[in-house]
Length: 163
Image (cartoon, rainbow, N blue to C red; front, side, top):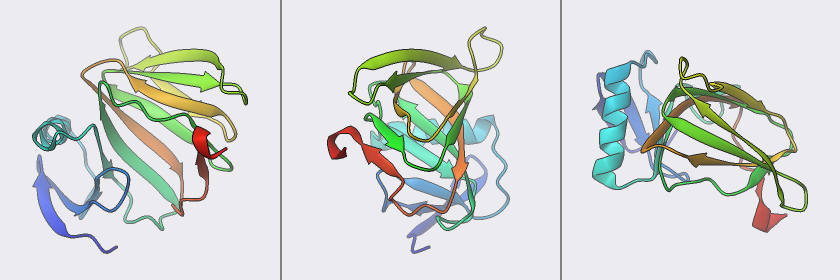
């Protein structure tokens, strides 16, 4: 990985990689995430006025499994997209995140709001390949664990305007 800086994020040593769509923070040592790390991630996003950030628990983009702690701020939805081969799992840590699903023609078919365990809302969802979807944070921060197969090569996801 050709990343630039190693820093501390709430006690977690991370390597900053700003080459992607959003800043990635790769764990430099053991990947242990607690409430201090989540608070530091939110503060980093506020300070940078960044709408999204992620902590990559895997070593680099060539890993066979990608586990990420992703934070989205309200007002930062992801565009409608689908994955051709890979599926992904969303598991909420904090806040609420709406998953919108669309037909091949782009019409909204259904939505589900995820929230942290104990709220009475679903807290985990798996999105199969080929399903058009988008995420919409409904709280100031929507923080979730995303797991998906690697490696990352940039060819599995297509966005609505690329269809």
